[in-house]
Length: 584
Image 1: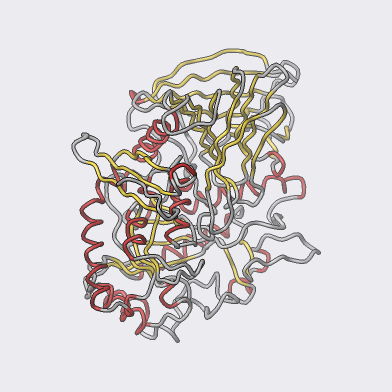
Image 2 (image 1 turned 180 degrees about the horizontal axis):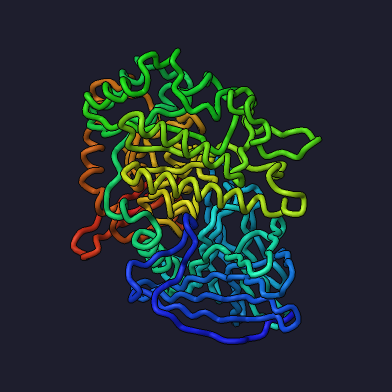
């Protein structure tokens, strides 16, 4: 049924009443003006309110839609997109980010032909495969400098769809929002439903200006204000150093070795809790494993702090192992369809975050953990996606709501924890970069970019990620060689330069450093600390693209200070023919 215009109003600021839901925020009503257009179905009286918030200090319009049930009866929503935009031009090209595990967010460009082009996720997360970002350029594929670009970035971490449909008259319609294939929502009388926000940006000068506009907005009005200008600590994660074989002695030895290189934080990764010796057990039991840590976490943290390092910890709160005390007590807390078999991924199930009792339990467990000792950083992981999406808490007719309710539940838990512990730095993760999106950045100022720590692979991954997301949000670590994912051997300088172009850290065993390696690592740590303000807070200019064959598979990124007085260039030769050199 066609919706008819009823009225509109213009208000100062950017109204947003929902708690713990990611959104672009303002700190004054003078920062934005919002147009609210009320559309109504003349037959059913269902109202759709379209919000257009113009950000005065940023080159962006923020879109969302709100369905309001004034029909006098129950309504079932099956499709409600965050934004719909129509464009006219002779031809169009799309720039998107796609890939898979260990090769996330590769830059892909294609010409749009007649019919529908779409990419989407039905995995319960934004996914490794596709990212909720799209750029449209008229005439030709977009480059750093041109042509003009229309960009759409969804502030959402769950199932999404991005669609571009070219009509027979060469009119282009863009739709971005929750994936309708996995979505239904029942609206009772007088109830409302709001879509996730979509950030719309326009650049007259290609992808470069588009990225800088998005980066400015995300750093200043999407990420947590507490971490807006604070630089991330140089950390070392224990995963590739010890995997599950962490103990009190091992972690203290790693910390002692790391301290010699001026590393600032040790992060205790998987294996510290429950009966967790491999991937088969323990998830959900967030209490310390006394066999590995007989003195408890508090004594471990004290010893790490005495070495001059801060302490962080890894958790995977959305998951539960079959072999865990939590699952034995509450088997109904896992998402699954009654009377049917359950599918495990990485030998684990997904907890039903649509349930209030599950959310409250997780908040209590993690609050107890964070109150127990001096933890300054949390890495929040999610190592499998959603299958058998069915909740015991809701009736059959509401099961189409569970995927969306799940991600709203995750947002609520993240919001409650970050509000209660504002000085704990949160880094989110999903089997690497499977949930790197604007929704997560609302809570987490940095995100684990990929489980692939190989420097050559990371150049491609980080370059693609930077199209939409600030470099300071890209968690990047120096790892050992041969690399644990690709077996590739690269010089320490290459690994360090790539990792410096993000939230810098290490993913290796520092106990293996020889004296000359220790000196080199220490020098790179010092160099990073010198350049970190430029990299984290400056403007990014992508000079060479690793996706452009004419550059000889090279990459170069320039970071320029806001006052334009300082700049640093990081350049890398990924591969090249003998006798062909890029000038430096």
